[in-house]
Image (cartoon, rainbow, N blue to C red; front, side, top):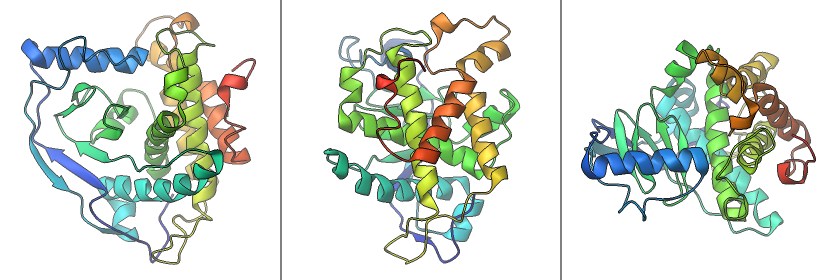
Amino acid sequence: MTFSEGGQFEGGRVRRRSGGRAAAAGGGGLVGVIALAIYLFTGQDVSPLLGGGAGGGQAGQVSDVGGCTAEQANADPTCRFSATLQSLDAYWSATLPAAGATFTQPPGEAFEGGTQTACGAASSSTGPFYCPADQTIYLDLGFFQVLQSQFGAQGGPLAEMYVYAHEYGHHVQNLTGVFDRADRSGGGAESDSVRVELQADCYAGMWAGDAASRVDPDTGVTFLEPITEEELAQALDAAAAVGDDHIQQQSGGGVDPHTWTHGSSEQRQRWFTRGYEQGSLEACDTFAAATL
């Protein structure tokens, strides 16, 4: 998937942290790691109970990602992250008010090694995530290499954009109250935890189905070129690679639906496709679905 020729994206949308280190195994740093781990697996923010989750580790150097042309966004992963967030901003700023929700932009941070968040300390093993406490999308720049080398994903630009759009979907859920209403303390194939994740996949599909027709008001050109069948297959492949059943198989254990928190590969592909083809919040209401 490529950004349209003539596209231009402003800087300052994403900050980049380099030289940071995850917290050491001791003191406030370990507390931060525990707090983030609990949040990612259960959805519960326990950092206040643990005495604050953001301490420890080294912050590293922080700088804003500068402006990017479409050509740079097509070639450079950090520019692609920034440009994709701006495309997502345009889509959700128009879509959410119609649903009665107030839109705010989520900050983005691309990091290497480690970083500190309001949800706790993150390392390169954490993977991309959204922290509702600071409403920020965090991206470990090495994640996509891991996705290909350890989980067998094909890779490709739309595969990366799917991940950004999924995390942005969690921001939408935060704004619309889904996070507050859902019980994310448990797991299972039909659990609220899985419904939250599949809805975020569906929201990612909604954006992907719209981006090639939405015009950037700053440039007068569409954000993205039309999606090819090959590019769509790459996004679906990425969705399958992070399915609970696939991850369990890759780890050498048996598949146990009772422990799922994100959904199977088939479910994640199907709900992304549903959003892509139907393009509505109603179609993405996983909580109204009798079965997932």
